[in-house]
Image (cartoon, rainbow, N blue to C red; front, side, top):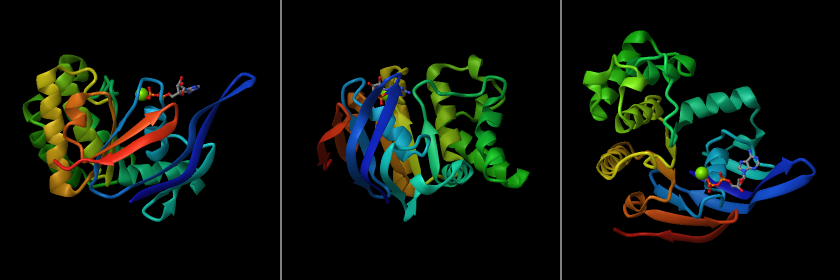
Length: 228
Ligand code: ADP
Ligand code: MG
């Protein structure tokens, strides 16, 4: 469960303080499939980065499973992220000099010091899940956008995270590929009770989530549960 209280984020722009998140209070349960929506510049990515422990709030408290992550130092935060959180970005962020297999393996080597055989088992299973087994030795620049995003999803999931944050994951994909990727994430959520939190404009995502949180100018203006 993620809860946060009175979270704000202020960017210093020279002399000016720009408050982009105002007093955010939010609670998200495990297994929820949530979309954060709102116009461009409204603060969706900032909220994702704060909840996903990639960035620290200027004030306020963020609790993830009883741990106040705002109190962790950089190393502890990186470890916490490695054990609990997966991130999927709009631009995929794969490492160009690593193969598909190695990109997925990377977080396991960096964070979770698993033996090689165990790593291989997990990676092969995920490659199968995202239907990329036959592409495992290719490099990112040899793949289509949809294939890259599949690899990015596998990389985000390989550590068995409790929570996956996805920032506009379908923005660079065509409709058919977007739908496949969304179905893939939905299936993973249902199989493993993984929490998915999206920042998105995409109607195709918004249609299938359980909950839609609207942010405008750094403030939550609507939060509704949708029954399908
Ligand atoms: P969204 O993802 O909804 O498009 P963002 O969270 O990226 O919105 O941005 C929210 C606001 O914060 C915008 O006004 C943006 O210009 C500003 N912002 C984001 N990152 C920074 C930064 N590193 N420094 C200064 N301002 C930023
Ligand atoms: Mg954004």
